[in-house]
Every structure is written in structure tokens, then in C-alpha cells.
Amino acid sequence: LDPRLVSARASAIGARLVLLIVRDVTEQERLDQMRRDFVANTSHELKTPVGAVSLLAEAIESAADDPAQVRVFASRISAEANRLGQLTGRIMSLSRLQAEDGLTEVGPVSIDEVIASSIEAHVVQADSAGVELARGGDRGVWVRGDAQILIEAVGNLIANAIVYSPRGSRVGVGVRADDDVVEIAVSDQGIGIAEADRERIFERFYRADEARSRRTGGTGLGLSIVKHATQRHGGEVRLWSRPGRGSTFTIRLPQIAAPANADRDKKNKK
Ligand code: ADP
Image (cartoon, rainbow, N blue to C red; front, side):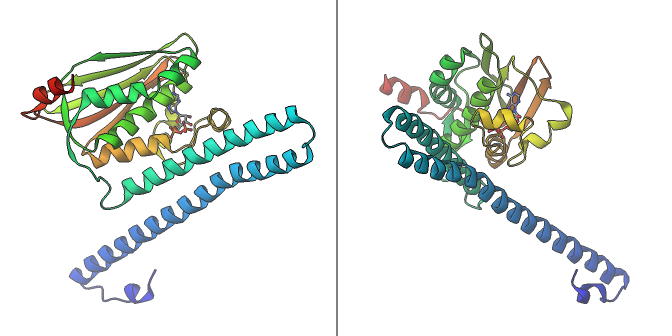
């Protein structure tokens, strides 16, 4: 606390002003602390795969005359490199979303296309996890925003739903449009989320089940991106979950009317 603030005159108006300034300083300190934590956590998260790559490279050097071993180490290096790529990609998304000019390409966005692209990007993951991906609900719904960011947000929810679900279960992606609101719900029949974790999982790097998340290649950033992306679009994320039964994440966005040329564009594309 700045001592000059403390010694400020405590007249009725002055006191209120001091209070405002103090609150402002506290807010600034909180933001600074958040930034410091982010840098510290990020460095920590990056250190693990970088350390692994360097150990594996040494292992390759000493196993040079054993081709089978070399292949094993090389494929682990490649896995760690993928993880690093995913981590840096997510860190960049998050810092872009937190910047003032976070959304670059803003325009009418077809929710049909957002859902189709985000499902398409996860078909292989769902197949190898033995999870059925199903799309349902309203069609022809539009919002205003940045399509790529929305695809990434819905994609993160789908990816999580698959990761935290058992084989043979189903992940549903549904759309519901009311008067002014579009809801995109991603539901799973997976492990669910304990009540105590429901707020915190949207924080950067927070994982309800640290070991499981790391094992499955989680970064702890996916939901944070979902939250910021949704807020950037003037919306909010809701979560319903029952441990052992499953979870539903719902992205609620303001709806806009379909652009006049929407149908024509669609026909031209065919
Ligand atoms: P991660 O990359 O670890 O999945 P996220 O930010 O996407 O990071 O999610 C944070 C945590 O929330 C996860 O580590 C997991 O514990 C929990 N979580 C997210 N989605 C689900 C889900 N669909 N079912 C159960 N737990 C989930």
C-alpha cells in the first residue's frame, strides 16, 4: 500500500476517494499477481516436456547400436514434441483471448459450421477411444463472432468429453435456440466433476485429477480457453455434472438473425 494514500485526508469525500484508489491498487496487484502466476505456471509446464526431450535425446545417443530402442525413444520424443506443440498453441490462444483486440475476424458465424468443424476435428479421437459422437438439435442458427475461436472452444469441450468418458459411451453435441440465445451443449456419460471442483476447473492449469489429466495429455488450459472465448462473445458457460454419471457443458451465446445471403451461400457451396 502506498503510504501517501494512507495519509490522505479523511474528509467524507476524500475517504471515499481513498477507498476507490486503494481498491484500484488492489485490483492492479491482483492482475499483476495473476500474470506472475501465469508465467510461473507456464514455465513449469513447459519444463516437463523439454526435460523429457533432452533426456530421450541422450538415451538415443547411448542406444545408437540398438535400432529397436532408438525407435522407442524417437517415438517418445515425437509424443513429447506434440505435447509441447499443443501446450504452446493453447498458451497462445489464451493470451490472444485476453488481449484487448482478442477477436480478429468478427462476422456472422453459422453454428452449423462451428459444430460440423469441431466434430470433424475429433472423429479420430472419438473412434480410438470407442466413444460415439452424436449431433442433435436446432439447425440454421447464427451468432456474431470469430468462427475459429468458437470452433476451438466447442472442440475443447468435445475433446474433454471424450477423454473423461468410458469406451462404449456417447458424447452428444446439441444446439438449442430460444428467442435471443443459442445454447451449445456438450454432454458425456463420463466420470463427472465433484462439486468442489466445478468452479475451479475453469481456472488456468487447474485439473480436478492431475495424474489422469497429464496421462491423457491434458494441459489444464482447455476450459480456461472455453470460458474466455465465450465471454469474448458476450456469452457464458454453464456446467451440470453428477460424479460417476456424466457432465454437460453449455455455451450460451447471443443469437443473431441469419444473414440475408446465408441460404444462397450454402447453395453455391454445394
Ligand atoms: P485438461 O487439459 O486437463 O483436460 P481443461 O482445462 O480442459 O484441462 O479441464 C480442466 C479439468 O477439468 C480437467 O483436468 C478435468 O479434471 C476436468 N474436466 C474437464 N472436462 C471434463 C469432463 N467432461 N468430465 C470430467 N472432468 C472434466
